[in-house]
Image (cartoon, rainbow, N blue to C red; front, top):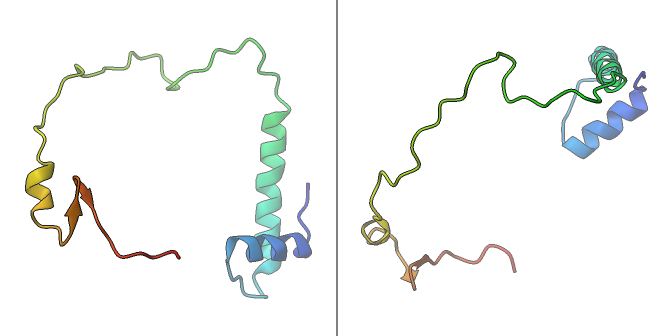
Amino acid sequence: MSLSLEDLQSLCILSRLEIASGEMEGVADKLSEIVTLVDALQAVDTAGVEPMAHPLDRAQHLREDRVTESDNHLRYQRNAQRVEQDLYLVPRVIE
């Protein structure tokens, strides 16, 4: 699939990116190659393929699930300007 310059301009608006007009065609070509690669990957039949967490056949070493730190929130909240019911109070940003 090839991206047109209009498609790229729409993507730039949506992603809030600014690409110089001299670079638009090169960027469109590179993005078209990426979309073509993704299309090729989606065309592969993956039925019966077991999902894996790592490409190498290795066991994942997990640590023991235990508490390693104590609760220090009261000590940290002593530095806060305003705290109420163990919550940090901050200025309103959205009205």
